[in-house]
Length: 153
Image (cartoon, rainbow, N blue to C red):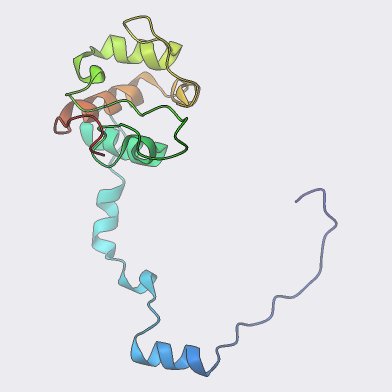
């Protein structure tokens, strides 16, 4: 965007036609921002620290759930058939048997305790940049989630 010449265009005001007005008047056009329950927003961002609550927050904003599923049990949940299945991060998976030192070493080096390498599909180098306290919080969160069989999201 910075390489493009600056434009001095004015954005026109939005115009709502008859259909839009009818939808708004009848409640057929939702405005989700109006429905936000503001009293719950503070709970969405816990205080930074070594806690399972902060670990859950970090796991959610880091995208763990995108590949490993809402329950973190992994499996082949998204992507092309050739994409590797996501690991089960619950206590029922391999990660559940790791110590914190093994978890940290795996994230920092990309090599699991058994010597196998994490597939490059997993952005472990990005996670390797997290502080030890952040990784500890994530590890505590992973230890706190219910064990689930692999592949159940």
